Image (cartoon, rainbow, N blue to C red; front, side):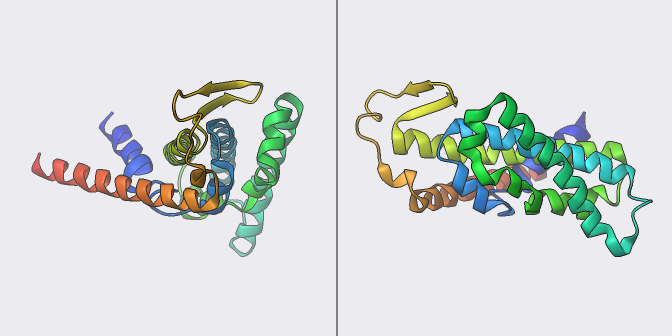
Length: 210
């Protein structure tokens, strides 16, 4: 239990892919205009990360070192294609909203980075834990950005693509439109990065006192 909590803290606080390590910022800034988009992108990235980590770890002893990067990309691309086709079939509105950023998961540095740094060198079990912790960290980071941007920039919270929009009284009529644009996204990311770094430092100091 202690090891699991430690791994979760690593993925969420100390090594959060977006808000600490700064990975995947391009798609994160682009799709974080609504909470619904963030949840969809988080789920897609999580499933690709989990699937590719498992396969790459299982095949790590059979993939020649000379071609391991192209092999990793092919494996990741297979999972991305499966997720993309599933979204188009069952969630077409969400698929259209996320657009090109679903196929671009293939070259997302979070996915390839975990394959290179961890899955290609560790057991399947350890790679699953790594995928879960990093996937949750990515989801929390992306959803946090989207929640702040949508609430302040539109005065709404969009949870489902088919009309599931919650209007926030007061903010919905007078939103701060700057948060809808890239400038606002960078402001939100900056403040959230500062908060997550503070939280990580506070957690480390608390552990040291214990």
